[in-house]
Structures are given as C-alpha cells and as structure tokens.
Image 1 (cartoon, one colour):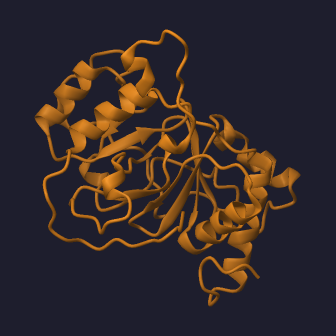
Image 2 (image 1 turned 30 degrees about the vertical axis):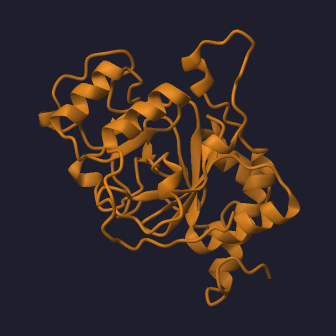
Length: 263
C-alpha cells in the first residue's frame, strides 16, 4: 500500500459518523475510545507524552490531557475514565449522543502504544519495511503531518531504555511515544474513506495500514459477533524502532530529501 499524506477536503455522500466509528472500535477490536475535547481539535495528535519521546523534554506542544467536556455528562460505565476511555456501548451512545460530531480518539496504553514520528521519517521507514517484508502493525497518518506506528502496550514506558540499548539516545530524534493515560486520533475504519480525499470535518487521521488487514479470529463454533473481532498483530519493536530512529536521523540531517527516499 502506498503511504500518501493527502488531507484535501471535498463534499461527499453521507458516510457513517463518529458514533459509528467509536462503536466499531469498541466492539470489533475491543479498543477503548473517548471523544475528542475542544483542546484536542484541529488534528492535534497529542495526549500527554511527557518526555517519553526519548530525545526531547516536554515543550510548548505538549500538554496534560484535558478533562472531559461537561456537556458529555457522567463518565459512568466500565473503563469509562478520561485516561482509559471505554468500550461500553451504553457509555459511547451517551457520550456521542450529547455531542454527535465530536471526533473519536483511541486510548493508548491499554491494548497498544503508539510511536509517533514526522511524516517524512514515517513514510521512509514504512516504505523500507514493506520492501524488506518486515512485519508491521497498524500505521496511521495524521492531519498535522505525523505518522503513527501502533506497537504492543508497554513500549512507551520502555522507550528511553530501548533507545539507549540501540545506541539512539541523546541524538535529538523527533520521536514521541504515547502510552498509559494518553490518546491518539482514531482514523476512520471504513475502507471507502482510506484513499479518497477527506470529506468529513472531524477526521484528523487516516490509516496507511489498517488493523483490519490483520488476521480475523474465526474459531470453530464462534458466534456471529465474534467474527467481527480483529486479531491485531504488532511488529518486533526493536527492528521497528531501529528503522524509525534511523529515518528520523536521516530526515533531521538531510531535511531536503524527499519523503520515502532511502539514502
């Protein structure tokens, strides 16, 4: 799949809305979701990564995760905290019933963490991994020009030690990590939206490699709803991180190189 960062807008036929997307992620993948707050709007892909990026301390673009808007009401329900999100359909219906156009965010640190790099570095690393046939998990592009690689939970907490072990620490890499208590924008799960220009104002991320590309769990005798469940696989983090760090370094030292070109 070609990794293209295009964020054009155009009118289009009616497509499922944020509530439908939130329910899909909660039911098909079991991923906790939460509504985007006003402070997180405009394609901002930050939760509260702090200094876990492995290279730079928290700066002006980093802020604590904002509180849930008052209009979204009570957070009751299983796992329904601001940091953890929820998979409870009743809570999801209540949240988006109060604010139906609010974008969906995916809570990190529960079923996955996210490594976040500049778009040029991300597409470079993605193209290289695909050419070499390296295993990859889900990969998303954000409207703010970042590429996000979904990895196993716990990676964000271990990132400084991993970078040090790989001899990539203290090099000023623009590499961020999102883990427990953070969230990232949820790309649309509907295949019809992945290649077309973006028609919907609330979208701030797009799948480059969707989680639905992973193998489905189809156990013998499974109920119909179980067939929706996606078995998401994650990459070997050391190989992925080495490639991401190398791409970030090349982009930092050679900023005029076109994205996706391997030096």
